Amino acid sequence: MSLQIQTLTNSKNDVKKFVYFMKRVYRKYPHFVPPIYSEVVKFILKGPFNKIGEKQLFVALRDGEIVARLSVHRNFAHNEFYKTNQGFFGFFEAFDDQEAVNAIFAEGEKWLKERGCSSVLGPMNFAVYDEIGLLVDAFDIDPVLMCTYNPPYYLKLLENAGFKKEVDWYAYLKDTTIPNFMRLINQRVLKQPGMVIREVNRKKIDSEAEAVKHIFNQAWAENWGNVPFTDEQWHHLVKDLKMIINEKLAFITELNGKPIAFAISLIDANQAVKKANGSLFPFGIVKLLLEMRKIKRVRTTIMGVLKEHRNKGIEIAMVHKTIENGIELGITESDCSLIVETNTAMSSVLEKIGCVKYKTYRVLKKDI
Image (cartoon, rainbow, N blue to C red; front, side):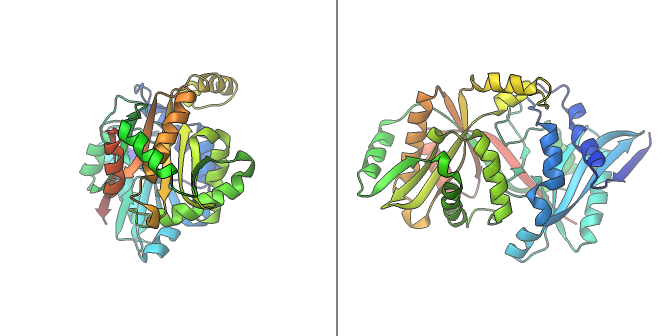
């Protein structure tokens, strides 16, 4: 059977061909949650990464049928920040076809080497705070909002193609039980003069977002792979969050009127998106809206505390408020993710309050 690697253009037709291929890969995987495919096409064509990097899309064809896809890219913001020339890959999908995977990566690696890269890291779709990592366990559980899912054989395909583990990211699960020590810490934190944990104000979402961005860029400065958000990346993120954020699940902690910490949890819309089956029209939007009312899980996506205010119980107090408000909304559990394995302080806090590690996402690397 003939195998061919095709270099795609940045045309809408080519990108649609690239994106929609995954429908065939996941036909027999009941825990796969189809993305809204049209939004993925838009993200690749017009998303904020296009202002801070360059990309190339490839597909592998066997007898004229796509059997694998791959994006390779250079993130100029990352490489400038770290003074390196790192290559990346993302949007990887494939049937269990090692020959095709080896061939498509060989073509992608050639593209990166021509641009001076000596290694390739991924999967990242496209940046570290977009979808990241290869699922390596818990294949019998649906992914939560903004997290990926893949067949179990992907790890074998990538390892056989020469990739090795670079770093793992963890997802934790928490029920609505509030241990007594959490209540005591929460009371102690809120008794401090000038300390307030308040809900975000949707009517002032832009100014609230700027306060969160300021904290985020400081609090996450030492996190693995962190690159400060550009204004365009941040505005794109805020635009997406505006549609799904619930004020009762998003908080800013202030001390004497100054924002010092934040925590944002989102209703796990994936439970509704799955019903839409990848399309909002003609009936997907109705199914999505009806299903949103039934969701009992949230994803705590990001939390940050300024360095000088850490280890004082603020993180636990914000989780306490998330649980209390979540119970009012009928929420029964929260996914807390993703936590990079090097962030042992946050993992320790989560485990202390009763969170259970239940998923692992892996970033892999290969010298080229």
